[in-house]
Length: 66
Image 1: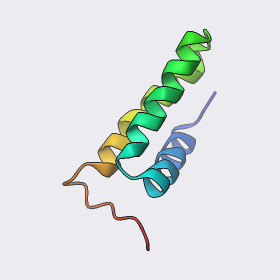
Image 2: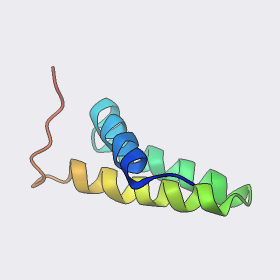
Image 3: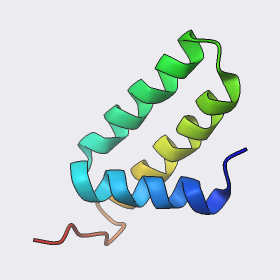
C-alpha cells in the first residue's frame, strides 16, 4: 500500500519535472494501471494526478526551480 507521503512526494517530483503537462503524464499512468487491472496502483496514480493538478494550478504558487 502506498502512503500519502509517497503520493505527495511523487506529485511534487512530477510537477517539478513536467509542470502542468505532468497532469497528463500522471493520468496516462493511472489509465495504464486501470487497463492492466491493477486497481490499487490505479487509485494511487489517480490521487497523484489530482495532486499534480493542484500543485500546477495557476493560483497554486508552485514554481519550478531554474
